[in-house]
Length: 177
Image 1 (cartoon, rainbow, N blue to C red):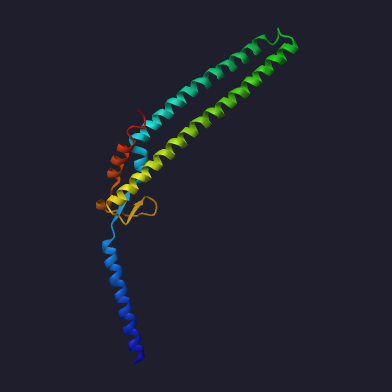
Image 2: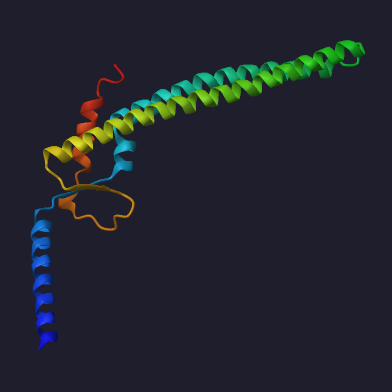
């Protein structure tokens, strides 16, 4: 008889816990945002990408000019090496090596500049996106907002990516003015 009492007690407790949890789960309000899509398709992201490409093109022109100078120096050395003294040849070869080191530094500096700007814009956009998602979450009283990663299925009625994208575009519209 005691085993029956234990079983009934456990059954009642479990039923109560499951009923309470079910009621709480029914109140849960979830949403889903495709963060990579928002990051790639926002107006700010597109403008920042265009700005980075413009900066990269300017930097590439500098590299092209310096590379042409080095090639001209090498050609000059090759054409005139038989007419030059050993000392003059060594001096010109040394200038070419120095110019090549400058060329390598220029490439590294340009890449560092572009990388730094990319990180700056990515950080700024990520922070703005996080703020927008948190604002929407508070306004709509979402229990949780999920993103890609471990999400396997998302019902269309909890998908808020487009709403977040519109809000992010409004928040960042003055960044490039």
